[in-house]
Image 1 (cartoon, helix red, strand yellow):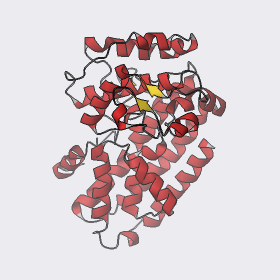
Image 2 (cartoon, one colour):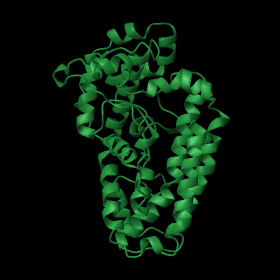
Image 3 (cartoon, helix red, strand yellow):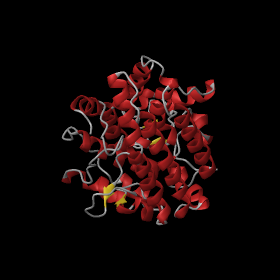
Amino acid sequence: MIDDDLLDILNYFEIDQRMGFLLPNPLTKLPEEFNLWHQITDEIQELIEKNMLEERLQQLPLLTTHKLSTNNELRLAHLLLVTLAAGHVWQDGPDKARLTIPANISVPLFDVCKRLDLKPIVCHASVCLANWKPIKETTIFNASVIDIITFRFTQHPANRWFFTLTAQIEAELAEAICAIASACLHGKIEQSTMQHICNAVTKVTSTIQRMEEYVPPNIFYNNLRYFLSGYTQNALAEQGGIIFEGKENLGPQPLHGGSAAQSSTFHVIDAFLGIKHADDVEAFLAQHREYMPPKHRQFIGWVRENAAKISNLRNAFGYQQALCAVKKFREVHISVVS
């Protein structure tokens, strides 16, 4: 049972007690004036296949976003626009990146990003946390009963499964996040705190191994992965990053693409357990924290600050088991993605 004070903390940091960092009820449709964004993203795989995406994007009017006011509207707008941007940049394949993003995408995208404090590129916050919808009414939540809203670049089941299984992992880690938040709020470790962390991490260690059920490595790397790429390689690197038309005064933007390093959960667990990484890894993780929703970034800092005040945290019952569970997850994660 979660007490009211803990619920207030979770709400403040935009964390759901059941769904963790996932947006609990993502919007799936924007107001009618944004139908063209939906139409193109819905057809994007076919348009790329038929070499018609560029023509459709050229016909797209530059829409203003001032009527979008709720967080859910803005998160969906961000998801749709970064999908359009990814399709535009990578439509000719990973070795033929477009070097600019047209103003009819970049101008509304920058407006949405300013209000959300998110980066103008596909990231974990958009393509996973805000990119799911239920297939049917059910009280359970797992990859089999949800679908993605957009970011479909291949008809292979891998496209859906990669994101829905990742969403399931995020939800399964909510148990650990709530236990950590409770310990930090009350300034003490309960008998069950470390067990909750162990339970959640052990569960997702099993879940992530199901990725191979529908995601063959060759399909992922040859058909999907490059659409998640950043603007930091090959010709884009030579240019210094992507140029956003309508925002040319900002210069080239060397943005990173979507990455598991942008998932807040293990940053939180590391901060709570006091897990340290090599300097280069710490720098990499710090860089990717900039791609998280702002409240989630703040939560990581809040956990780190308050965990440091808990006496004998590292001597708590189950602490070593929690460390072992995290280590095991990371080993399995590496084996799955390599």
